Length: 280
Image (tube, rainbow, N blue to C red; front, side, top):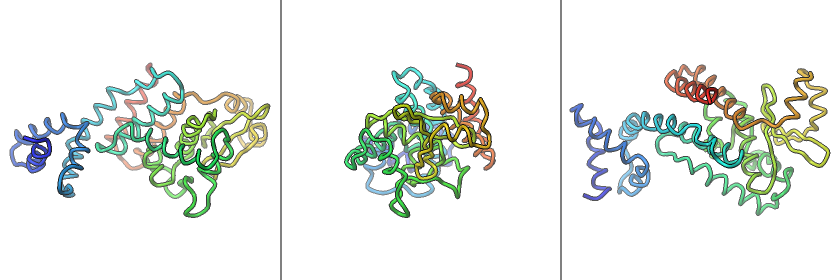
């Protein structure tokens, strides 16, 4: 039996009356999970809405188990940039559903960086900020999602790239990870309430508000004139945010989002990831 024939047979049994048959189908589809999107695209017909719903229901626990088993593997990677990208890839794949794969984020970022290089952004953080955030209207590649600021989608970089909107930390992460591909050192600043990017140019330290059109601000001005200015604020600005700090902030955003939408199952998953991050 060919793979497509076997898959077609399994799809017909998704809503079988027998619990024994449904469990057998679940095991078979779970075993095929890695190759399932490609095999589905090889079928001569699209999935029906009910089939998509049942597949999502069946594979959701499998995706959750994969995430929890491989979570924190990113810590063993060789550089902070690689660690951040892998961690956010895992989060994005989890939020996107069973058809998403972690490597999809890397492919999307590679494409953005290639387009930015063609536009003359290599080695220039200001040009890259303008390329990513500086357009107006339909020409804006990425902008702040003011309308749905607390949506969980804002923490899914695959969704952010596709939709063109995100929250402060997701937009900063795309800026950082794209810049990494173009030879730029762009770091994060764990600014309270509004994550910023951080760039050193000679003797000057700049903060970049990716949520507000990639605006550059002298760090010393922000430290002096922000309403929350105090010695601890200067320390936050002076020290780049670690990968762990950024991932913890992403998880806190998701925790709040799932609390607002009363999505207890997903909130519990996020909280387990947070606990693992704190325990290690």
